[in-house]
Image 1 (spheres, rainbow over the protein chains, first blue to last red):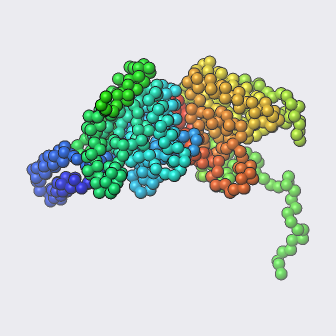
Image 2 (cartoon, each protein chain N blue to C red):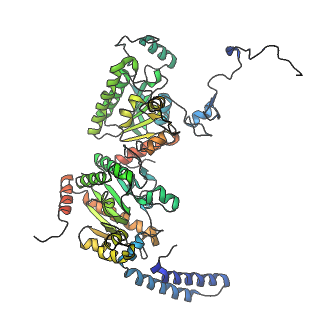
Image 3 (cartoon, rainbow over the protein chains, first blue to last red):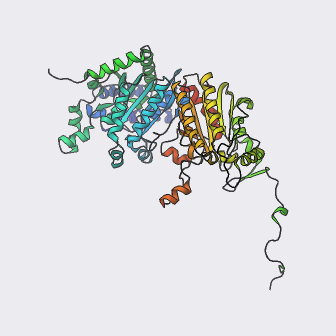
Length: 317
Length: 285
């Protein structure tokens, strides 16, 4: 388990707790009372820390090295029924964008999402979760296939942004994302979107237009990452914490700004603290959302989706 | 000074007099592994040691895909005409007759309908042994009829491609089979009947430029050659060295044209898993 800077008090208590328990088992001394006391303290400390997280701390949690990624969720949700499908039928198979068919409960879903790696090698292989145009085109191909066979779509957003590369521009990164956004507004099947980690800009929205858009409690969603915002507006990366606050990028903010429909609660300490619990919650919410959406005719579904996006933004008339 | 002296130079035994293992008992894979033919069949015609997927035909694929190898063959008696009175080294009708005699097949494709894991499936499978799996009017018509059967009975279609491309002896009529088969694939798509394209070694030329690349999913087997222009043509035209894995299934997947590559052992399971998922049926065990 890795601890972030602001989690250090928890780490200290956890270590104390482990030590006490070890003394108990090694020396045959009754330490249950001490252990209980420390455990209680630990719980309180966790509550105290995680209840009052700053925007920047949430950004850090959203990038926690132990945090579950798209394929972790897919495998936990679909098990053996997941069949990964590859390729955009044009240029490449983008490893930063994964997708395929799987059962959640009794229902087939087309599940799509950005994928990050877990060590240096796989991070490079997955291009740090930054998709190229091929990734967005693969995602669209899969969504179109789902539409053809009347299957609902679930997308998981977890990206620091679409890949800013030379070849990506040559092959039309902007066009690919634009096409996806347009097609997703009028897809004839339910689309459920969950921001599970980082939701940066067009790279996120390229698979993010949906009937139910939700964010995990410790994810973030904005037009730019706090670091890049800081470097543009303050001309240095040092103001990232300030930028994180200013951008209003937390789930709560997004809900208040009505750009998402709901917030999904994470286990205490974040999604990685209790993966089983997190998956259970997610499964329940996806199935509930689908049960609600499948009642709508394709026409009504698309109309209410379009209306939702038409209402976004604030202005004086 | 040698102890023995060879009086006659070179190898003198005539080829036909050489002692040889009878054909069909052993199989030697390209990496040099020797496999017993029966063991090979038990292992889905995949060399157990190096995973080499041996080229097989419709008979073997039907055996792999259909439950208890039970199926009904459609349009088994369709055969070629000779519309252009084509003649190269041989007359076209002679070439066809010879191929029929050699292979026991009527043309380069067979269509079977049967149960796969308990559910109906139409499988159109090409045979490379028949004039290089070339696609002429018969192949086109049989694919069109297979698709029609799928449409009328609402049964998923699987086409197993294994072809050198269009059949030159039927010239432009062969070319038009690309359009003819595509018409039927489009109709299947309209009716939302799943179509799976399995590209096997080799899938080239006109086949790739039509039904082989048009599946709801395109899948393949490890190491299969898939491409439009042959590697020699590409090399001669461009004058460039080609990558080692050029036009392999793995290359195609990396470039976005295949949904997945499957070992032949898992073929039946994976095809049926896809069909259950895409049709929102319960996944069969």
